[in-house]
Image 1: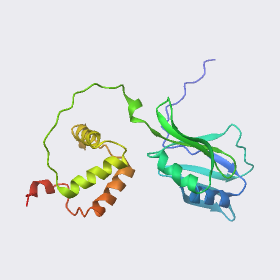
Image 2: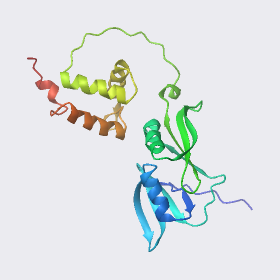
Image 3: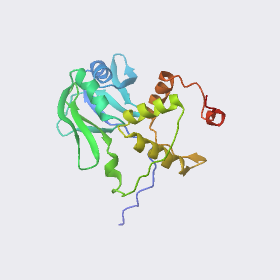
Image 4: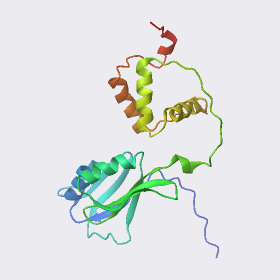
Length: 214
């Protein structure tokens, strides 16, 4: 008898479930030590919790912890920044941050119940092979506050000023849907809003048409 073909089913999301000895304590650890936020606590007393890192959620369920052979890997936008927060909170580090041959910079820690959690961000150099180019000097003048924001943004993204400008230009020349592609992650956009406030940028994206030098 021929086995029936598997149906095509779209999966909207997945939630790893970890058995923990104390749901409330585990949720607090994820929130205070690992940088997650508590999405929900279910039951009285709680027997399940949902904790989120960005849009990714895992479930913590009351039970007997079984960390052997179980781990969860998170791809984040800045593993080094998250690592510094977790290390400052005294989290047990299993593996220090490092650039891996598989194209990510990551590290691993253990949670309150002994589960191995790894966090990593993608290394741009591994996404595509090197492309040899020739750079030329281009005379350019920028609005003072915008130049300050760009300099800080390049530092935030660990890029040279030249690389950051090229990244922005290449993306804005790439159609995407009804608009253009963006080189910025959600965290980058939050940082940009912070930098706009820092440098007193109170004009919108169309202001360049109104710029007049003093």
